[in-house]
Image (cartoon, rainbow, N blue to C red; front, side):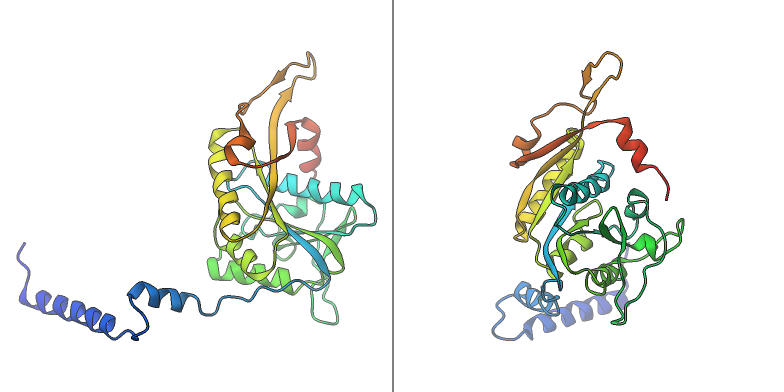
Length: 272
């Protein structure tokens, strides 16, 4: 294919503009990469604690479908049950797929305080906030990253959370915008990783753990969900998702193993 003289001229001008721009970088920048880092470093949110909240813990998995939200709910309930004097909150940070309203048997729209803050909905003694309270039950949230991060910031800082001893944050699958925004906005006391024993899930669980380590968040340990199934008739134990050396692979302490049990599924599926 023959390139026209006009195309050659446009190409030369574009390349010339790029080289001119690159040569006009300030003297204290040795490379274009340094300049890009300087620009990207501007405007990052300043990390600040939430008023009245003593500890914030993330619950993450990397892989979807491993029972992370169910585990987050049970962790919140277990912390509260272990010490009745402790106050616990639960933030559903999965903007696109909120699960906390159904799992916590909650519905309705949060009230607004005189300080123009949203008041969490409460059930079983747990203060909860979720995008599911702010939209219709079947209405999808079709938002890009910036709107999702803005929603997370509002649910963190424009909610009357305190006083709380623990705020658990149920994160969406992956290691993307929501995870980084959470780490940038508030100081995290630690992160709990949830995974099944299946190798496919462990790959993403390892990524999640490594992401928290890179941003300086302590990884408390691993919850192995769906670790096995015991037949209710013969009591034979079957490891449906495998029986791999989960903790050793991830370099984490095992906080506990949760088997497949019909009562967990039944209680989770009860609609509010």
